[in-house]
Image (cartoon, rainbow, N blue to C red; front, top):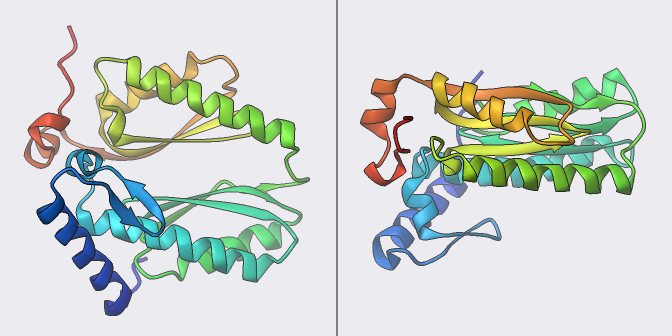
Length: 214
C-alpha cells in the first residue's frame, strides 16, 4: 500500500539532491547525515527521488520503531526503492506485528518485508559475525565480473543473507549463487525488484551495465 507523501521534507531533500548532482558533478552528496559519492548516485538504478525517500524512510523508521517498542527489542530498517526490509529481534509476535504496522505508515513506504526474529537479543559476538559475513558477501559480489555491485544491497542477520536491489532474473540468480558460496552464510533470501532485460537496458546508465557473461 502506498501512502501520500508530505511535500515539505521530500521536496526540499530532492531539490538539494538535484542541485548537488548538477553543480558538484562527482562531489559527495549528504543525505540524512550519510555521505554518498556522486559517482554512486549517478550509477544507482534508483531515481534520485527514490534515493532520498529511502534515506528519509530509514531515519523515520529508527525513531518510530524505538518509540513504539521502547527497550523491548531492536528493529533495523533497510529501504531500497521504497521497499522496506525489517530485521532484528523482539520478544513477542505482537511486537513483531507492531513494528511492521508502524513502519508501513511512514510516507512513501510501498511494501514491508518483515524478517524480525521473535526471541532473545543477538549477542555482540553474533552481531560481529554478521558484519564480517556481510563484508565477505559484498566483496564476493564486487569480484563477480558479471554483476554490477552497486545495484545490490546486502543485509545479514543471524547468518541469513538478504539481497535487495533492482536486478534482472539472471542477476538475481547469480548474486544468490555468489552469496551462498561465502563461508558463514546459512541461508540466502532474495528481496529483489526484478527488471526485464529490456527495462534494464532502457533505465540503466551505460556505465552501470555489467559486462556480458562469457
